Amino acid sequence: MKLASLKQGRDGRLVVVSRDLSRCLAVPEIAATLQQALDRWEAVAPRLKAAADNLNDGSHGDAFPAGSGGVAAPLPRAYHWVDGSAYVNHVELVRKARGVEMPPSFWTDPLVYQGGADDFLGPVDDARFPAEDLGIDLEGEVAVITGDVAMASTAEQVRARRDIRLLMLVNDWTLRNLTAPELAKGFGFYQSKPATAFSPVAVTPDELGAAWDGGKALLPLRCHVNGELLGAPVAGVDMTFDFPALIAHCACTRNLGAGTIVGSGTVSNLDRSKGSSCLAEKRMLEVLASGRPSTPFLKFGDRVRIEMLDAGGASIFGAIDQRVARV
Image 1 (tube, rainbow, N blue to C red):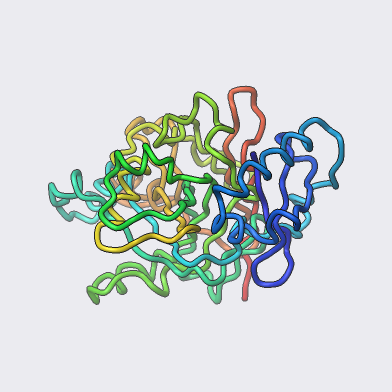
Image 2 (spheres, rainbow, N blue to C red):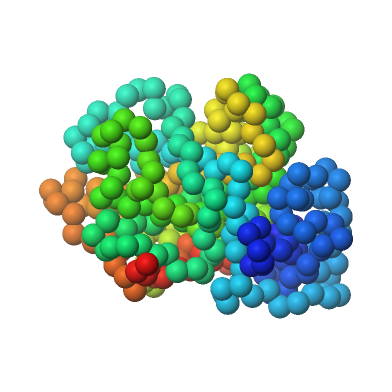
């Protein structure tokens, strides 16, 4: 099934969305918000699925305003948002371009950071920044929403319990010119990681069919900048740590509450013909090839689109389609 949040209050109004993303149905008798549904998932998921089945049968429903600005992030705010860096070839490339060696442990111990979760952007909200010279960049990712995950859970336990409730797409906006100074302080990201945007809908893993292997989405993530394809790397290829591994890493020393969002990090393939999911990676490849980058970071008025299509060419999550704007 596919779920979304229409803009209403801080936490949105939960709706079930038809498979073709054309119609939606509010389900206040089941759950008013997505977080309420996640808190009682075992009890409400069968009822949500029944509503989704009726909607897909065409019996009722209102038009789904995916591109109107009336749709929030599936979780407009969350208790916990943690982003990984599961595509280690991307990390290696970043460090290589800076002339920095990558520790061997990066291949065996996942990298994650905890991001701001109080103010997510909707899929077509303008992404507003105070200045163009901050190095404005997109980062196309896949993310999952978990149920309750107990401390010290293993990846095998996460997979067996089906702790992954929902999947969605991410634009993890990054201000590249603030990243290095922040990391040099030795205390992690903050100002360089502004509000994150998510796809119009979050979907249960079964919506991907054979393209979901229990831990990875086996489809290309298509990223466009101003209508031109930046890249379409396959999300399930070269993902060093799958989602159960990332979740288990995050739960090493803490419980994860229902509604925790875990991101994959920038999707990246070793096959460079697939393109990139962020401008920084493209610029790094240019540095390695010619000694300097030729691709600029984003400017006010630029537009970014991130989407994943099924084998038949239909949009699974709807599109993140945002304009870069001044605050």
